[in-house]
Image (cartoon, rainbow, N blue to C red; front, side, top):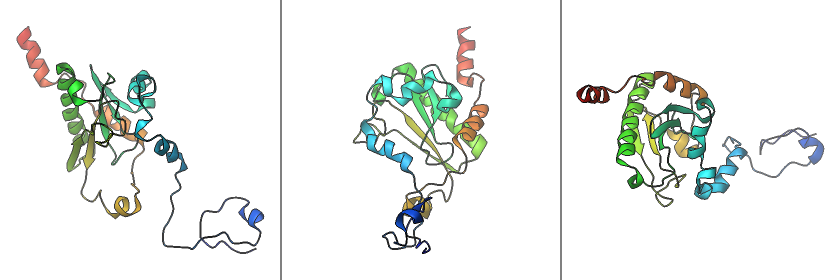
Length: 206
């Protein structure tokens, strides 16, 4: 029985099926990370979530925080970990309402949307000490929104060297913590007290 040529992955029973016949392929310098589970997401693309019933941002608040990776629930919006993070601690700010555009937010929603973004940055600085951030919203399918039907803002912590050759050449991102660990860490550090500006406003009303 001939040994593996290194042309691809081996599975139990390969030799029994192929006998002495070597599988086709020319060995090269690349290592393969087999991720077939991603095909379901790729096939669905940007059009797989079109309404409230199957939108993950609408379904998430109906489940337990640990199951949905939610780190904080506000009055009009909530904060959740990105299931496909660029870096550990990659957060999404989402309104509860199923709206596609930033201009669809009410005045109250806009205020809390901004407040949660600022708090997310403060919490991430506290627990992970990033040296920078990327903040952004991709609007519409042509604007690059992965789920265009439900508005969400990205809060991505950045560190020097996190954009090295690995994601650029190999299209692979190494994430150093599990989503569950990051969710718990951020949720535990999220402030429970009323923000100072709100407290001051309450005292003035009194």
